[in-house]
Image (cartoon, rainbow, N blue to C red; front, side):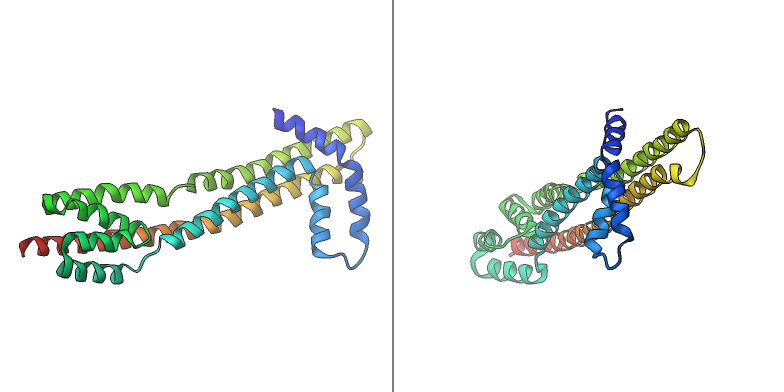
Length: 239
C-alpha cells in the first residue's frame, strides 16, 4: 500500500520532467546515457529508483561473491601432492603446516581432517564431512539475497505497471474521453517500469547462474580431494 501511494505521488511529481523528457527525445543525436536518463524519468523516479537499487545491491553482492570464490579456488592436485610429500618427510605436523599456509576452503578442510589423524581414519572422514558442510554454507552465503532481488525487481516493475494503468484510467475519467494522448502517459509508465524490472532480473539471473556453477565446481573439487586425503591418511597410518 505504501509503495502504491509512493508511486502515485512520484508519478505526479515527475509529470513535468516526463514532458521535458519527451521534448528531448525528439532531438536528434541524443547520447545513449541521455536516452536512458529520459526513459528513467518517464518511468517515474519513485519506482525506477527502487528497481535501480535492486540492481546496485544485487551487483554489489555478486562482485563480492566472485572475488571470494576466486580466492577460494585452489589447485587441489598440487595441494595433495604437497601434503603427500610432507607426510612422507615430516609426518602429520608437516602436512598441517602445508594446509595452514595454503589459502582456500579445501586447505581448511584438509587441516581439520589432519588434526584428527591420530584418532583413526573414520574420525578423519567425519571431520572432513562436517567441516566441508560448514565451508559449503560459506560458499553459498549471499546467494539468497541475489534471488530476493531477482524476484523483487520484476515485481516492482509489475507494480509500476498497475500504477501506470491506474493513472491512465484516472486521466480518462477526468477528461471524460478516451484519446491516445490521454492514455499514452500512463501506458508509457507501465511499460517502462516493467521493462526495467525485467532487465534487472535478467542481469542478476545470469550472474546467479554463474555463481552457482562456480560453487558446484568448488564443491566437487572439495569432495574428490577429500576422498584422496582420507586414502592418503589411511596409507600413512598403515606405515
